[in-house]
Length: 510
Image (tube, rainbow, N blue to C red; front, side, top):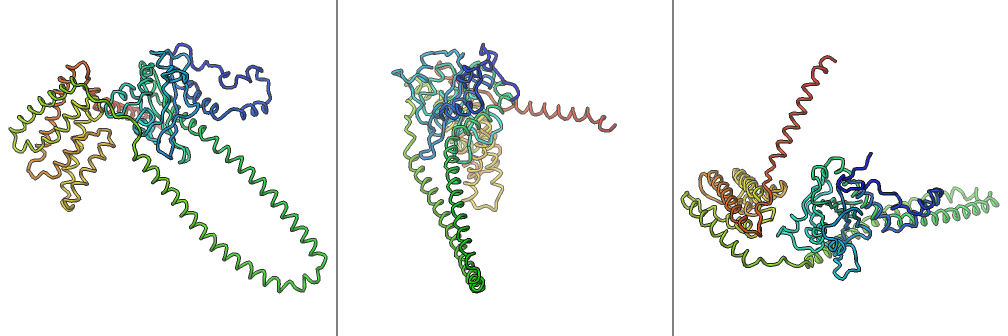
């Protein structure tokens, strides 16, 4: 990065932090020590301090980031463990609840909340590990309240305490160093942080490369030890080679004392030597092949055993507690909301020919709208787009008459689920709709398709009214249909075309 990026709302600039936080002893000496002194002092730094330096560097130079948290994946049990020295917080950050912040940082408190292991999909580390990919080209910033209030997410106390402390936005960048060292770096920002600035291309690239640097630093101690062992092996091998050379030279001098006998026996010895050399070569090739096969089998056996052990460990459960039950008042609200919606739907669908055959997915939709209100799958974007994609795929696959029914229906439903997952519009009732439309033996399926979409739109509007009458509910969480993204893409495309048209006369003149 050419210039450090800092959040102007932080008061004092983070970039002004002195390098004394890295090497305080050098600054006390006035940086008068030699390079060897500095190297010696750096070698005395513990692995924990080395990791903290990398984490601190990422936090100080990123825009809007006020805390960094590093989690490493333990491949033995598939859980994320907190890295020693992997927590950093900007010293000028003013918490909303100082006590909540101390519960995360001060281990001497009686109500201290330790960084307990997280499973994929739970907690901030597990959440962003499941959400993000190493090949992602940008970071995804999400409000922490959206995660803690998501009924699909198991409760994790540390995440709730971080929200109470005043951290409002979070993103996670996974890393994979050499295919055998994995983890995720969490970046936390204030609730009022500018999301557009956080997602700036320069800032985004810095966060991703800083996460890779943190991951490399965390595994460096293993390779440092391996390098030391390799140097020792090379030194030992050089000494052994030197001994062999001196022995060979001594034998040569001994042979020189009786050259006549050596010349007389040379043809016979040469023939024996060639025969011996050929037999050794053949034996070496066979032994090498057998050794390679044994090595491959041993490696495959070890990997299979490790996978089976990990499967058994993960199947035993993540050790988290289930979410609490819904309050009685909210349960009654769910009952009456579902009842009113389904009564209206069933009465309207009954007036259409074969309309009641598409009522099934609406039962699942009521569960989402009134039972899991803040869940991403319950939002209007997922409901309408998920149904559209899923049913369209089912109707298109139905045209493949050469496929047998026992294969066509599972294929259509699986393809619909995969497409929804890829597009980020997962909606469970849409999977049920794909099954219904794949097996429905009626004419004018497209008219039923339109009827189902209109029913979904009407139910969503009704759920918006019913849910928001309750002070405990908020629906929807967002009205995001991707229109702004499409408009932005069109504007960028038109701007590029305009630039090409403006530069066309100059090209013609040239």
